[in-house]
Length: 193
Image (cartoon, rainbow, N blue to C red; front, side, top):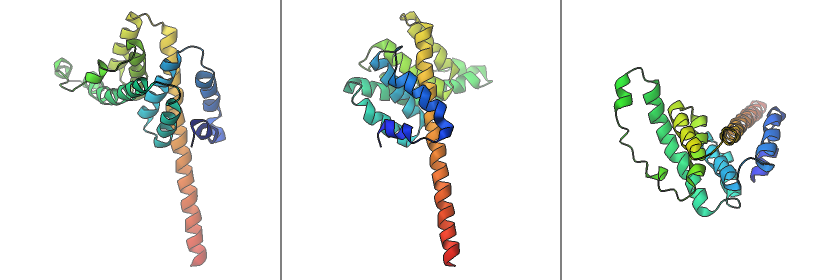
């Protein structure tokens, strides 16, 4: 299913998401196409919603170069790891953990092949979805040092918020479908018996 068809299939409870997607993605004016679609890709992967991720990856092929698409995927996967590690360091009451090195491979943070600000924005978006304050602060600091405005940062976070909520809405709609199907099948079994 295409991304537009997937979004159009959402129930009325997701009306605000459809409107926000339209204004923030379809009619984007704040981000470059690469910043926008890299954010959409990294955020979709971070939602862990298979239908959304599949539809976004298909749509993104027409919007991003192959290296940029791979870099967005890299941002999502490396930050999926880092957000857990650094959130643990941040949330643990044992101060010793924050002095200990990660000892995790993170070469993708350097060898991604796209503009550093774009990659850092995608990493920030995933960190927002995953709720890692330490990573949020680190990536926000880097993009601000590189000249990104606070408005640009918030534009990325708004897109991440909407993409994440689309994943939530799709998962909820899928759960409703499973429940309805199970009820229909149970009714059919009861009618036969």
